[in-house]
Image 1: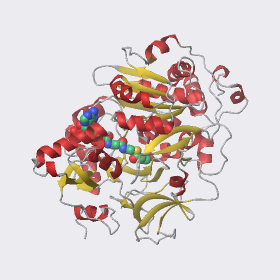
Image 2: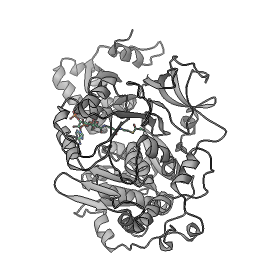
Image 3: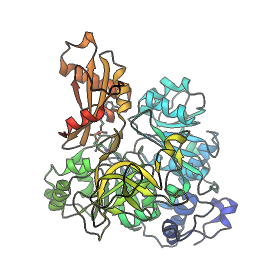
Image 4: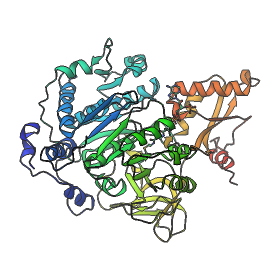
Length: 565
Ligand code: BCO
C-alpha cells in the first residue's frame, strides 16, 4: 500500500515504499542502502497503512501498563498521529531544528516512545539517558553533546536545575509531568493544542539519528552516534531471526530506556517486524511483579538481562503458568550454562543468548532452530564475519583465545555506529588491520560457536551494565576519606560480576569503622554518579600495586579477585 501523502515530505511520495524484503536484502548486502530513509515514515507509517487494510493483526503497536491499573494501548495509526503532534511540539514551541541534539531522560512511560518517534519525524538527534543519571552525569552529557533541549520527568528536574547554568547551548527544557515547573515547557499542555498534521522529514540514510553514551576504561563516556539506517534498517535480521518476531507477537523487553537494548528490543527490531512492544513501568525491579506480568498478559517473547534470569531461577517457577510465552532471550552480559538449564527445566523454554554492543548491535546469537551449546553465545550473525584475532590483527584458529572482531570491507558497514562524536582517535582505535575490535575476548570452537572470556580492557560488565572503572574512581576520590582507589570487577553469583573498589584511606579515616565507612562511600558514589555503578564491594588497603612508572595495576587486583594467578 502507498503511504497516505499528507504525512510525508513531497520527495518521499515520489519513491516506492520500502518493504521488509528490501530491508533484509540491504542487510544481506544484496541491495544498496537507499539514499534516504526515515524509520517513522518508511516503517511505522507503513504498518499503520497495513493496519487499515487488515494486513496486520489488530494488535497494539505499544501496550503499556504500570501495575497500578493504568494501561495505554496504541495502534500504529495512533502512534502515528500522536507522534506527529509530539513532532510539532518539538519544532514549534521548543524551536528545535533538524540535526539538533535532544537529551531524553525519562522512565518507561509511553511518552518516551512518542518523543523518540517525534525526533525521527523531525530529524532531531535523540540522546537517551537512564533516570539513574546524577546532576554531574547530566552536566557532562549536555556539555559534551551541546544539546539544545532536554526532555525530562519531574524527578530529574532538581538535578538539571542544579547544573543548567553551566550549559550555554541548552535552549529548551521540556517537562513530562502533570505539574508545571518554572522555566520548563509543559509537554502535556503543548501536546493538547498541537496539530496532528506533520510532514515527516526526508532524512538521509546516513544522517545522524541517535547518540548513546558508552563507558570505556579511561575518561568520561564516549558518544557513539548512530545513523537513521544503522538502527532503523540494521536491526531487521535481529528482529526476524533472533527475536523471531511476527506482527502477531507481543514482546516484553525490559531494558531501561537509556540503553541501546531498549532501542533494539522495544523500538527498532520489534517494530520493523510489526510486533507489539509491551512495556511495564516497574520503577523498581521486582521478581514477583515480573512473574505476575508474564502470567497476566499474553506476552509471547521475553528479553531480559541474564541477571534477571539468575534472580528468577531462585524462585519456584513451576508454580507459574505463563500465558503465551514461547521465546526467551537474553543479552548484555554472559549467561551461565546452569541458569539456562534451570530456566529450561522449570519453564520448558530455551533461553536464546545474544551478544552485542552499543556500537555495532548484535554480533553473535543463538537462533531458533540452531543447536544451543550452553555457555556459548552462539554463532556470528549475518551480515557480520566474526573472527577471533590476535594483537596484530591476525585471525586465530578455533580454540585459541583472542579478541572478538568483525571483518571490515572497503566501506564502513551501514549498521555500525558512525563514530564517537568529537573523538576521532577513539573511533580509529576500534580498527585493527581489517577488523573492528570489540574490546571483548573470546574463543571460537570448531563448529563456529563463540564463547565469551572477558573484557580486553578494565571495563566491568555487571548486571548487563558496562561500567568504566575511571568513573567510579573519580567519584570515590571526591570523598575526603579516599587518597586513591582502584576499581575492578569481582565475581558475583547473581550479577555475574560486581564493582569492587580497593581504597587507600587518608590519615583521619584510617581508624574509622570499616562497615560504616563502606556504606558512606557507597552512598557517596550513588550520589555522585549513576547509582548502578556503585561499588558493591569495598576493601581498604594500605597501598595499591603499581608499575615502576606509578600506574595502578588493576589487572593484579582483578586476577586476585577472580582467583587467577
Ligand atoms: O541493589 P541496590 O538496592 O543496593 O542498589 C540499586 C538501587 O537500589 C540503587 N538506586 C537506584 N536509584 C537510586 C539508587 N540509590 C540511590 N538513589 C537512587 N536514585 O542503585 C542500584 C542500581 O542497581 P540496578 O540498576 O542493578 O538495580 P536492580 O533493582 O538491582 O536491578 C536489577 C536489574 C537486573 C533489573 C538491572 O540491573 C538491569 O536492568 N540490568 C540490565 C541493564 C541493561 O539493560 N543492560 C543492557 C545494556 S545495552 C547492551 O548491553 C548492548 C547489547 C547489544
